[in-house]
Image (tube, rainbow over all chains, first blue to last red; front, side, top):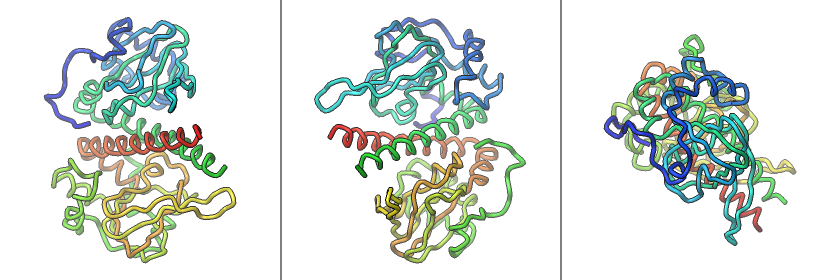
Length: 181
Length: 181
């Protein structure tokens, strides 16, 4: 991700998975909803109300029916999402091309941070198990936030580093455990 | 990591591993040296000369003899480092408390980012294989950079997210590979 002013576009992200889903509107209208689920989200624990309002204005709200994909393995797109309501299953294709369930997440979970930042293909598929409402932050939205609200941008980036760091520790532990068997 | 102005201290980090090593001085004096190894470092590939100079002024340069540890598994300390010269081996204790070599890295590698950000104990030990010169960025130094040079701070944070993301993808791939066996 490079921060270049002219890269920023004003419209919501156009992405294959999102295009198939219902767009509920800009995130600014969902501040109260986002606020009411903050208790569940490690991501927002030290954000002020103003932080959340600013961030929400950079997001778009979408809705997925059960079995619809929020993110598809292998796709190249550029958003992360914050699950506001509902349950989502994460599955990945194994070597025999079968979908293997990895884990389920609920409100407050964030998904898709890696591809938002590094632009690499999606690692896994995220599918709604129940009706699911979620807020989308595109790479453009993130770049704009960093340029216009640098201290909030830094706060979000530090959160992302902390989150990835925790996942990397956990995954490395699991890997060592499997290798020592 | 919380960004709080009064947390910042002006002295170099006091850490168990670093205390045992030779302190060569502030990073500002090593800008040329850091610049000359940029070609090897994915970390710096899109940093300008001014970026490097500003970052170098926030760093301290240390030297380790072969077999000296730059970072020790289990320690709680707060710095990341950039290897300028030499080779470093990363080892981790297995369940029988034996040191298992994981990988070796050379000039341009960064180490210890996770603990700098999340403050959790060190995941592995990094030991010099050859005489090694490296630049240290403490958490205080990072916080100060973010506050005083927010756009450079964001650039470094984006690098860290990208780096952790790449490692997480690789480690997850390795884990899946082992689980599918």
